[in-house]
Length: 295
Image (cartoon, rainbow, N blue to C red; front, side, top):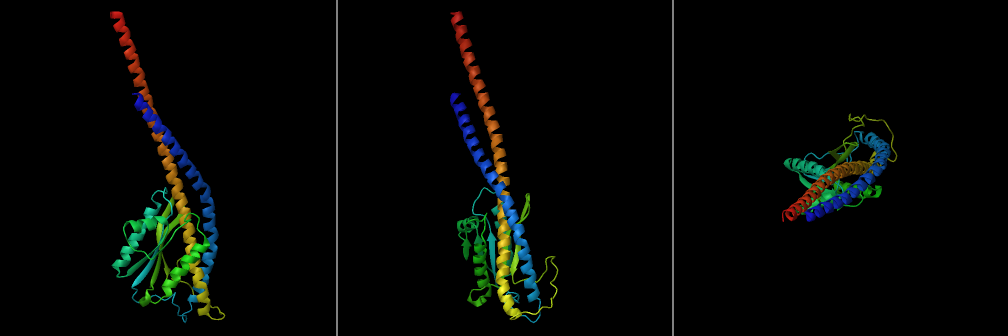
C-alpha cells in the first residue's frame, strides 16, 4: 500500500511540474499575440496600397506582362505551404497540411505537375517522413517572421514563375496558410498569388485607371510586382504567426486544465490509498489487541 501512495505522489509531482511549463508557455503565447496582431494590422495598408497600384498599372489592356498573363494550358504549379517550426499548438500545422494536400490533389486531377515549397519544420518533417519530394524549405522563426525571409521566398518563387516552363518554370503559384480572423477562429486558406488576378479590395474587377507612367507601364510593373508578391507573402506570414500563437495559447490552456484534473484525480486516489492503509493498520492493531486479550 505504501508503494502505491509513493507512485501517486510521484505522479502528482510530475504533473504539477508539467502544469507549470504549460502555464508558462500559455502566458508567453498570450503576451506575444498582441504584438503579432499589431504587426498584421500594420502590414495591411501597405499591402492594399501596392495591390491597388499594381492593379492600376496592369489594368491597361495594351500591357502584356508575364506575371499577369494566364497560360492557356497550365502544366505546372508551385504551392507554398506554411506551417510552424514547433509543436504544442494543437492542430494548427495539421490543418494547414490537410488543406495543402487537398489543393495538391485538386491540381493533379487537373493534370498539372505540382512543385511543393515548404515553410516551417512541421511541413518539412511531414514530407520527409513520407519520403516525398519538395523543391525548397525555409525554417526558423515562424512565430516571429522577418521581412527579409519574405523577400527571400518571394525572389525564389517569382524567379521560378518567370522561368520558361520547358526549363522547369511554373505557370501558377499558390499559397496555403492560416488566416487569422479572431482569437478563437483561424482557418487554413488557399490563395493564388500568380498569375495576378486584377481585383480590388472588395473582390470586384479592377477598374481601369487613366494614368501616365514613366518610363512606361511595363517598367513600372516590373518594379512593382516583386514588391507586391513580397508584401503579400509577408502579410500571410504575419497572419500565420498570429494564428500559431493563438493556437498554442489555447492548446497550453487546455493542457494546463487537463493537468489540474489529473492532479485532482491522483490526489483523490492517494488519499483513498492512505485511508485504506490507515484502516488496515487499525484493523491489525485491533486484531492484535483482541488476540492478546483472548490469550
